[in-house]
Image (cartoon, rainbow, N blue to C red; front, side):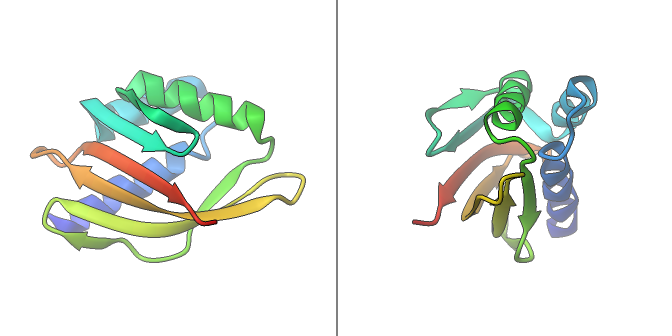
Length: 119
């Protein structure tokens, strides 16, 4: 199952580069649990579901023009949990790094993703 988790997370990474809302939503509907929960310091209350996450990503593109996120480590897995580090950059040269912790549903889709930013 770990290999499948890697594929799922790489597809998740790709939605953060997808500006076409329909394609982004289609991918998320395949990899995100129906009640999947996303939370990070910008949305401490979190968002639930693929469409809410797609909307949050679209808002992030608007708030941070040129946003590009790149994984900086391999995905480390332990059963139905995983984590990895990433770096984000924007068109104006701002950058920040962080770590995502992921829990997978029984069907392999992402159930919960918690992101932390480095200070």
